Amino acid sequence: MFANTPKPPYYAVIFTNQRAATDPEGYGLTAERMVELAAQQPGFLGVESVRGADGFGITVSYWESEAAIAGWKAHAEHQIARENGRGRWYRAFTTRVAKVERAYSFDTERLDTSTAPSEESSQQ
Image 1 (cartoon, rainbow, N blue to C red):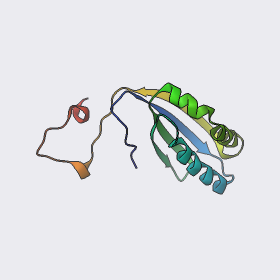
Image 2 (tube, rainbow, N blue to C red):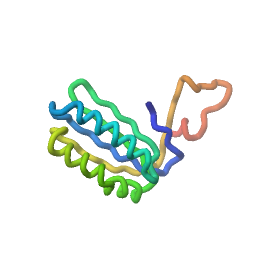
Image 3 (cartoon, rainbow, N blue to C red):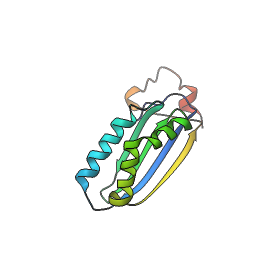
């Protein structure tokens, strides 16, 4: 599912990770809880997440500002989940924070050939 983000600028936190083979049930429950909790945080815009059969995953969360990201990072329950991630659920991970300055999209479900593409969807 695609996150419904506003016009840029906004921020993306890109979390790439390799799961360890431990506690899959606890991980799944915590991952669901983190999405639920993040959605309640000021400045949260959305999230997209995928995981391969080999345990490699990418989660991108979108935020209005760096202050909103810092608020999420400081959230007590999120801090506990991060510690569990380091100690139990991940073999390795990398977090990157990026400012989104342009965004483009294409959706065949919404394609209307009677109108010209918008500037946002046709920029290169």
